[in-house]
Image 1 (cartoon, chains in turn brown, orange):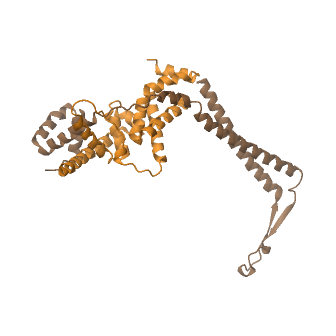
Image 2 (tube, chains in turn green, cyan; image 1 turned 60 degrees about the horizontal axis):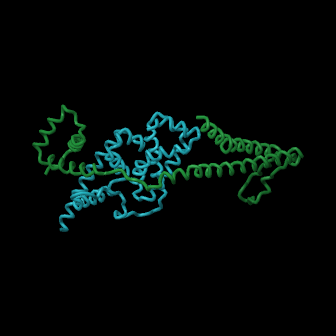
Image 3 (tube, one colour; image 1 turned 90 degrees about the vertical axis):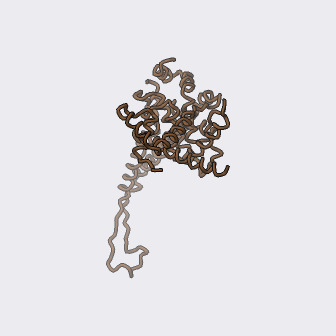
Length: 175
Length: 183
């Protein structure tokens, strides 16, 4: 028996679903009549179609609604409060670190400029022929950069953990 | 039936208990969608409940351009898919597939056999094809709605349904031939 083309298969399914345009339908029915392969395939697909039509809606358990209603309050509050609490703790930590650094900075702890001589490193001299430069560190500047980065992180945490959830709650209440 | 949007407005205004009405209205289809994906009743029930809870907490973001049911079923679909992904390496045999069909009335034996073979053939389809086919034959959803729920294009859904039926018909033929040989 000849195998049908994909186009013929598609048309058979459209025919079964009733989606074949009226203009094509009569012509296609004639083609089915003249082709034993198409007739057999139509029968197979039709049997399947009839069986699939018995697929029915499933019912959940009787206390489904009750269970959903019982969980409504727990679910997101638990997760969002957890997120907020962690966020707030992180924010406090960052601000404390910034505060301590600022106090130390104001006290002049980082005022000294130290230098780092690369020639004194543990790299054996036999690998390096030329003399290496000495790098000087400005402690004040380094701590300032760290404070700046911490402040940026604090703003980010403030936005994500406090402001965003707060605005979301406000929107929900006013819609 | 209370207008859905009025109901949603009242829920958002704080009348939480009214959400039960929406749950009752849509629980069967949400559960069916989850069951067709997960194939295990308790897991599908949990996923469907989870979907309703997620929907409740996202109700303010429902933009009312689509039908509420479509929006909800999409959440149910995504939740069930994420449950399936979380399932760790569990092999499910065909015997455990709990897609139930009616078993009452005359010709029960013949019908039960036919359903068994269809189930067997269905289990050989890929997940997306199987779901598209199931949703289509629930006769509640148009191709466009199935596309909205599954996040596919309507044309893709149509192709999947056609392809799934072709494969299913072929599988059924093979299964029935094997059955005939064992008789």
